[in-house]
Length: 497
Image 1 (tube, one colour):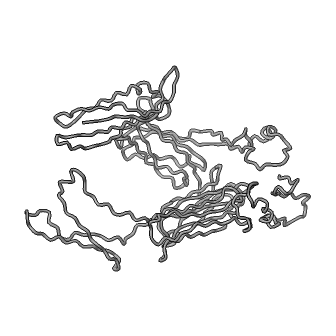
Image 2 (tube, rainbow, N blue to C red):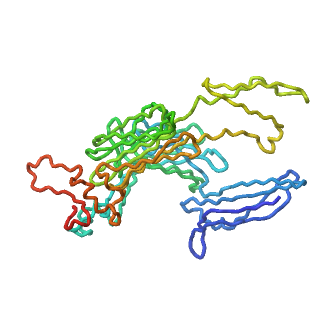
Image 3 (spheres, rainbow, N blue to C red):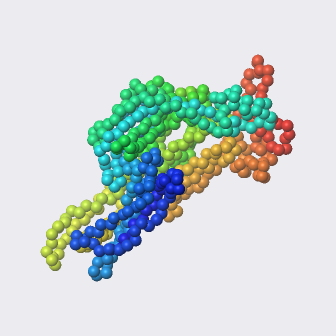
């Protein structure tokens, strides 16, 4: 038997008087030997670098050992096999069914499981700690619109408004308050039940650890947000709350997209894009819904038609105080079909005499009377399965289509909708669509207006002499009206504020 053992991975080792990380990709053994009378060969692997590894480091260090072996029998026939084994400082894999967004009144028990590779399921004692996160957000000066003249220096603004400005970037100081601590044994029927009275509306994080001999051998960390639908309260988030309870659905069923905002009043554009199957082929459908949403929780209900296929995508877009907010969610449509034919063996003999003649009866059943079926059968010596299993694989039907909606990230770009599909499919009629946002004139052809573009000088005609969306309805009591102006290089002395 010829065999080779190689190792890859990263290890934190003590070298040249300091701890350092070393990336590995090396061959440890390249040799050959004979098996014993049982056909077995013991291969000892000595990896001297493991003894110098810092196992107390908080990061998980994994070494991947690959064994390639070739067995050659007396007739000269050979058989090759490759096996991979991983060695980790945290070999216990912990999983817990905790979503990122939770409705307070529907928060049930949590199942926690522990596994190892290749050992499979484990029974372990794990510790659980639940924290409430209290974050203070800062908004950097770089995120505010530029002005021609700064009346105050950056330092003066930072010292006068510490809650809004940081040094030069957006930061968040998070304070973690321990709320709940417990432990349980995995691998049985025991579930984690968190008292609902401590889960008020807010942001939380949970830490689940497996500890052996005082050392963490596995960990699970998850941050999540809790909202209260009955009370109509939402947590403090850097972005709006967006929560779709289910992203896998049947056609014709109503879906609810739950959103929450701290803003007093916003005008949201909801965009639903999906595919429908027609006699002429597959068609991409786009629908739009403009909604006014107030502070607190909001719901948008929608349905996918019965001829919708593959995937869909929903978007929520609005502009508030000069900031563009975009949220999106993929939806997967259940395409289980009952029209696939069923093959039934009605007459079958398990044992036959050598040279005997036997008739086998096979029937094809389908729910569609218009289906024309073709049957192919084969017969072979079942003992050959010990060498290589004989298995027929059902041909792959390329009917997956993916919706991609490229909503602009700046105010003067295009909105593009694309559809991915396999070109080998038949009866596919899809095309990309590019739509301009509502305040841009159709005479402007470029998506981004930069000084090097030919259309840069035509932005004034694009606005058509009007400030879109700006109206002064009541002038009583107004001493001064300030309008933000955006102009081209041909206009001089325009100050933005």
